[in-house]
Image 1 (tube, helix red, strand yellow):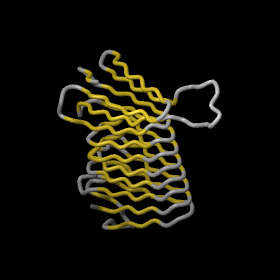
Image 2: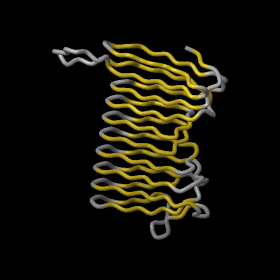
Image 3: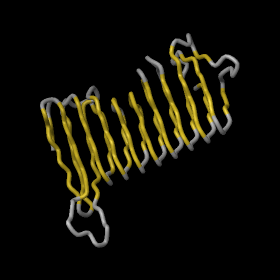
Image 4: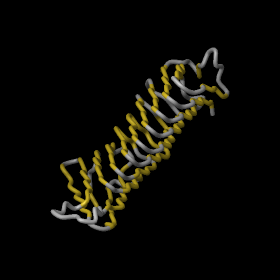
Length: 217
């Protein structure tokens, strides 16, 4: 399915698997494959594209089986995305997220921008080309975040999970790291004065029951 003039994309799934990619074309393209009893609705509302997936509701489901869908979305790079899934995973490349979240699933971002990343019971791996104002959190799962450039403050936190944060020389960051149970390690950064560049933006890194590693790349 092809959709023209798309500037915003909203995706929500239950038991779904999302693959999202930004491309240089002016239109968006949506494809999906159903596994079992599931439904996918795709609707364009002006410049906003809305995609919803959920298992079909059945009056009697004796075996307790749920269907799911694999959804692939290709969209203009400049479009913004909100994506969420329960019992599924999200993979994305070259995408600008306002928010991306999972419950019982992983998040894997490559060459993306993100404002908010949220995860419960899963792993987060995020390579961000730009973080304008980032809030990233995880409960019961580790986070690996690499940021090429900062244009705002960042807050990265976990409960019951480790944090591995990599910052480039283009990140003008003042790093404040804290933990309840765990160790804090700096690599290529002075632990007594953890500043990169001008230190204009504040990067808070915190964890409960997990280690923190902050390195300069």
